[in-house]
Length: 367
Image 1 (cartoon, rainbow, N blue to C red):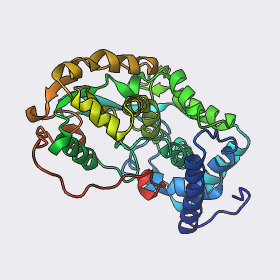
Image 2 (tube, rainbow, N blue to C red):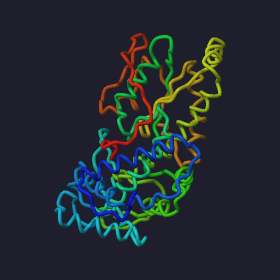
Image 3 (spheres, helix red, strand yellow):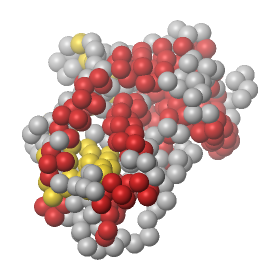
């Protein structure tokens, strides 16, 4: 892509970005061990910055201001042109530095408070552009069992998969419902960056990602604190980075499934009483569906904790549990769908036609 091109209109920019995203995605799918080296120019490409600004300007958080005191919705067309030109120049000269995020708290359904980090307008635009570049690459690696914060994958799809696994002869009736303690706050930066480096070799992009992780937090009382772990909720990059981190779970259970061998071998194991397991994950809520016994499901406590530990993450003892599917689910199914009722997937009903999930090329819904 010609990074010296003039500023395109939003529709033209959208077409250019989608075209490039498709290429990145196909390259990542075709070359599973490829480490992308030359991506930084795309981050400050006029088309990517234009699309990034449109995302930020129309996002539901566009009325909220960061530490700059400016809400994206209040930025006029002339100011926006100047902003994008300045960001492009700063990124090209590698002098761009993120500002601390403004900490705000919002009430949760359980009465507790959730902390969000609101970035400045400039930082949001750069994060959005960075996400446009990175997402199609990592989407090639994400597993079908992951549903949260991904293009065209909804909470309802995760619930449908749980229904499917629990019903008929599949009979995954025991469930390990997992919840991760303060997931967004405790992800290890070094472990996360190690996973990002598997696919991204461009040191300029890696430095930019790390700079956002380390940007710091300005609290309501105007006190500053360093961000030594985690990726702030409310950040445009945070959902993608959290999925990169939590893919350790998806990969672990995919490897266990693969180790069972062919379909014929798996069926033989099942008849012999060997447990089989599948994970359905929506962000940091997940269900491990178990075809086996309660003892098999209970054994997952230590196994899952060991998978999460290298990422600096811990299972929530209070919110995680083992249950039979007929008892109803409390976290991944109901909380992710926004329902306060417990979801009760039937163990007898047959679901309708299931949606085929493939790695989608990112579209407008991706941010």
